[in-house]
Length: 304
Image (cartoon, rainbow, N blue to C red):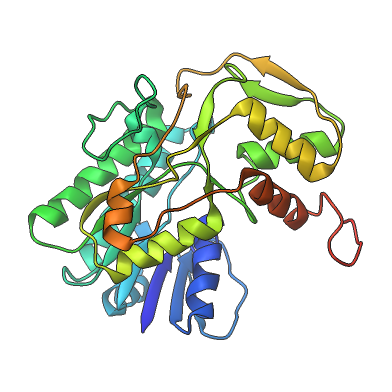
């Protein structure tokens, strides 16, 4: 079996690629960034929007395709960010959808940000109206619209809405990475909005397991990927302190308009489809992430 993974050099893409290889599958990894060659992995360093015939051939040949490539970051203020998001989140998805045969399982990652946060503490359900805040979430809604066309035409596609993913390899612009680096340097953690704001945190290992399971059952339509449990920013900061074995302080700063107050996933559909219910041990996942960043000694006692 051959799996195609776009965005294979990213946080979730690297973890998914490793899991697929460990499961004995051949993997074709596609990314603009280079990937280190490993047994079983074919690397294509390319832009999905460039019309590369090798990329199209790969997308047409897979037994299953995971489209994880995109431009992440709710807070990204890069010059020309609207154009970049449209290219990387919408046009790239259009290229993948055009190339992958309709019968091939295609798992596409969207974002929980399309919900605009929870309402009155009720978990976000896949059927809820979308209330995207900001350009990133709106680009994901447009991408989902392209996927919906494939569904309407009878094609196989799973639209996955991940809630905050944490663990080894987390992007440096995400909260735990920023907080671990700040605490390691003796700086206060920056909490946006209020320490009582909550996030549904998904262990990267569980996220990968869920993606693979959804492809195996050939799920169709939208599926939340979360745990159904919220953690306050205060509790998340406590997990950082525990991981480093040192007290931490924090400052509360105003949250931007794109920031949701709370996030919480309704995971019943994921469980019904796969039989798998992700469960995140917050302190464990943050401790693992800290070790992977070299922020605490590893088993050999080495602190990098």
